[in-house]
Amino acid sequence: MAALQNAAAIARETGFDGVQLHAAHGYLFSQFLSPRSNLREDEWGGDLAGRARFLLSVVRAIRAKVGGDFPVGVKLNSADFQRGGFSFEDSQIVAGWLDEASIDLIEISGGTWEAPAMANIEVLNRTSILM
Image 1 (cartoon, helix red, strand yellow):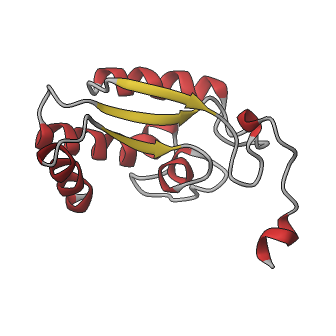
Image 2 (image 1 turned 180 degrees about the horizontal axis):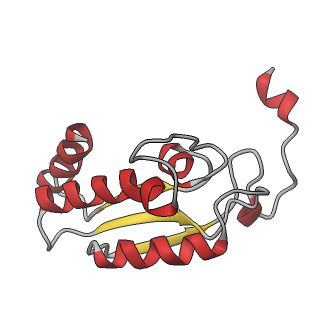
């Protein structure tokens, strides 16, 4: 978490206009949010609050480091469109928690890197990705 805090602070110090955390498309934050990929049984998994803990902890840590006047955004799935995955209802709840954590911007997207639902392209053939 310290590395993300420091990266945000460096972005601010070097003149960037803000930072954005990518919590969509199957990347790390998205993996924590999804009940399909986050099978943890500790405080970082389980119910939605546990699965969102990682993202919210990082958001709060970055906000503490960069202050309230530096924009912090999150790219969040509206849903991952996977059976049993991160749902639209989950997204609405997490968006509320992000708002409470003083996020300045939420960019809504959807899908995973394997099935980018919001990109309006056909599902990628998994075998071609692995070759």
